[in-house]
Structure formats: structure tokens, C-alpha cells
Image (tube, rainbow, N blue to C red; front, side, top):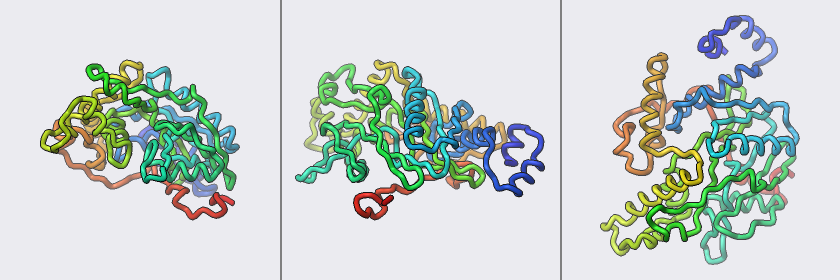
Length: 346
């Protein structure tokens, strides 16, 4: 509260403190909006904090029915996409409401009998958990969109995302048709849903999004060996010699996969950042915060990109990675809880 009154130059702090002491602290709508924006400003693992003041905050603390929550989540997806312009947006719900998926849009991971995975290996446990809640499964492609599980109190309900709420970009390459023939795609919006918003000790369920940096998709989601592991197939499409690591085929394939993602998003008219631009913007964020008399905290291993990090301005910098409030705090995955009779809520 003191930080809100100080930074926003609001009078009446003593009266507000007395009110909170007498009745307990519940953020007002203005305090909630301020706290959500500052939580983004304080996020040590986010390199894209420059536009933190532009975050649109939707106060949905009165919405508790799962079907109503889902309706608002659909509004979030459609409004945040904004025809490809991507708007930073957060929807805040009451403490008893929770989206059980780590992101609103995730691709299924199906464990096969031969030990291989169809789809995203990171989501095998999530997929099995959703099936235990009654999901029949998708068509079995590498990019089946998972349903959303919403908890309110002890109730959990599943909802399928309609096609118009899931905007996807088909991945192709401007100079290598073989990459386009791999049948790759990725969803346009990274909407986080497994973190609580902590404002003054009040923890609230939320979903929030910015926009992608291309390395998140091309250097991690599609490239990591524990994810889609596509570098060998991309290298084959490029005609690279993969017999020896010293040909640097992995590096060359990784660069071209990043080119493909950037060019594909541009072709689709969907906003995406590149790692050079976003790290330069981060140094501008640091300068602005210094002028405001505030320290910038950061987790260096998250701020540097997974592609050519030494070419970016954050490579040689050091950061204090201690967390401060307001902030976002991760909630443990429900499917790590022992399941009784197919569902931990019965």
C-alpha cells in the first residue's frame, strides 16, 4: 500500500493502513492494477519488461463459476491476440479459482508403447492428467491443443478451446522449402496460468501474457531434446552434414529454425520479438528504472537468450536475483499430487 501511494502520489495512506489493519488487506481495484504491473516490473526471469506500464489488468475476482471463468479466458485470448498486434493482458481471479494447465494453450504429449512421444514430451504428464479427468484425447497429431481444466473450490471442469481462440502460425522458411514441409506450427500467444499474483501478501489466481521472443519457440520448444527435438530434421532439410559435431550442424540448423519462426510470424502478421531487439530494450528498461531511483533485479540465466547470448548487451552484466513483492509466484502442478480414483479432488 505504501508503495502504491508513494509511486502513484495518492493521498490518504494513513487512513488506508488503518482500514487494512482493521478489516484485513484486500487490494482495491487501483491497488490491484498497480500491483500487477509492478509484479511484471519485478519479474526477474523476464527480459521484456520495458512496457510494464502498458499491462491491461482485468479484475475478475467476483467470477467463480468454471463456465464463467472459461468465458473470460476466451475473451482474454481473443482480446490479447488483437488481430496479431498482441496486447499484454492479465486476468485476475479470486484465490479459490485456478487454471490447472501451466499455459492456456498447450500441445498434448502422447506416450507411445515404444517409448517415443507424439507431440510435446513436456506435456505427457499434463496430458495423462487431463485424460484422467475425462478428456478422450485428440486426433493424435504432434500439435493437438489440450483442453483447459478449471478448478473452483473442489470442483474441476474441462473445457475445449474453440479454433477461433487458438491462433497458430504455420512455420516455413523463406529459402528452404524443406523446413516448411516438416509440418510445424506454434500458437501465437504465451498465456501463463500456473502462477499466482502476490500483492501485499494477497495471493490471487491469474492468467497473463506478453508476446513471444522467437528463441522461446525456435531455440527451446521446437529444438530442445526434451521437447520436439527438431534440429536433426531441420538439418536434413537444409542438407547439412550431421555425421560430425564439428560441422556445427546443430548451430546452423538452430539459426535457420529461428529465421523460420521470425519470418513465419511476420508473414502471418503476428507480433514477435527477436533476441537482439528485446535485450537492447531491456537495457533501456534498466536506464529508466535507474532514473526513477529503482534497482533492477534479474536472473541472468533467464535474461540471456539461448541463441548467440554473447552478441547481446546483457551478456556482460550482473544482476541481483532476489525476489521482491509484488510478484508472480509459481503454483505446484496438481498432477504431481497423488491421484485417488483418477482425480485428486474427489
